[in-house]
Length: 305
Image 1 (cartoon, helix red, strand yellow):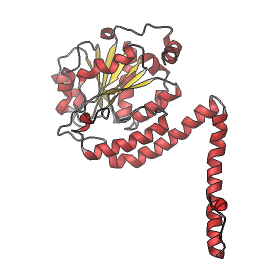
Image 2 (spheres, helix red, strand yellow):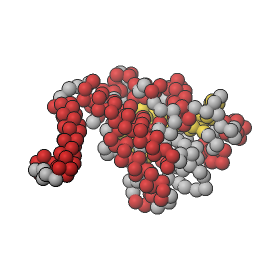
Image 3 (cartoon, rainbow, N blue to C red):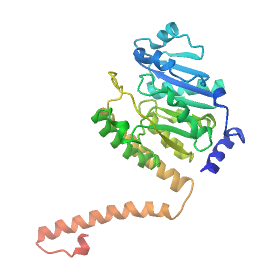
């Protein structure tokens, strides 16, 4: 695992010491859309080891960015104002670009609604600092106790999306794919084709798919979400069918990239013969089953099965 991590890092910037000094290299990106209520509290709780706090006002109707500029006194904060709403993914990507230009070594994404505890940032980045991961993300389902405050409909929706994401991303050990509390090493971020990553709420799931194309090491970090009176901008019921289609597309691309474009093996042949045999067998069996029913002639078990 560490060998693969080193390979990715070396491609981007040469051999590095994985035990970077975090107090000189961490940037936190906060995409903001109607976050006035909690944003100042979130900023105040970000650990002092963080050097840059980049708040991206994503065309926010309540002018969260201007509110931060007026009320905030933390010198680490930089506010970016998008002239139009680009989506949470689009806003995050702009923050990522700013963090890379500033020279950040590790970049954390944190939502501004107060559901994520900024005090967990040291725990989140620890696997990256120690060289055990390229990308880390929060997992609200790691412990049963961590889900006690989560609304039931969110639990069901996230379980379904997590299951589907395993197929599309190829990270079978990863859960809670839409968790917006993430961290990435800048060297790995530079390798990603960020222009191809989704600009909407599919951003986190799409990031996992893109990371898999690099064979990046992804680690889940247990966390407890904080739920209050805030409304989630992501409506799970509306997102499920849209996300499902995007997951199917990513699954197809992942299979093509992994088993045909970058290599060709026995698994590649199985991917060709397996689905085609399944389709033919299903059609042949059903056809003969219905034909035997229409003619009142018994079909052999082998023909149907």
